[in-house]
Length: 210
Image (cartoon, rainbow, N blue to C red):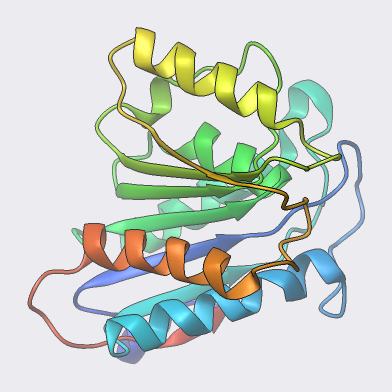
């Protein structure tokens, strides 16, 4: 579903970017765990913002990164283009988990993006932090993540800092990849960052699904 004109928010949009496999060309199912895992984050963002932030739920047509194709990043860029065309000037926040975290980082340079949250992000060596320049960025990673190495996130933050890019990192001790343990904390950290960095004094918003 696209943001219909009557639903266009006057203040901000958050785009939810789910995780997925490194390689995959199947559409992410509505009942799949990576997609469903992001829905509570959208609800908390809306609650914390007093329904002043619209939440766009992206369900990728091709659910993998797929090497140089960077499939999820291409799809996310199309979503941002559509938001910018339909709601010009409205600031956008990106909220991605795992593969979605890498997707968020890669497309953060889009002109409509103001804020980024990466949850247990997949940030392999050599990932370029440049798209985050000028963006309010929070990365959250559990120290016991066995899927996406938290040490790689540490290295990414160090590279960003060396390049003069401000990235805030929250380390969650003893927490793994799926954001099950201390789920409320994951939700609140993400929502607090997005609400604080996106909102101005204008009312409005809804909830949508691609």
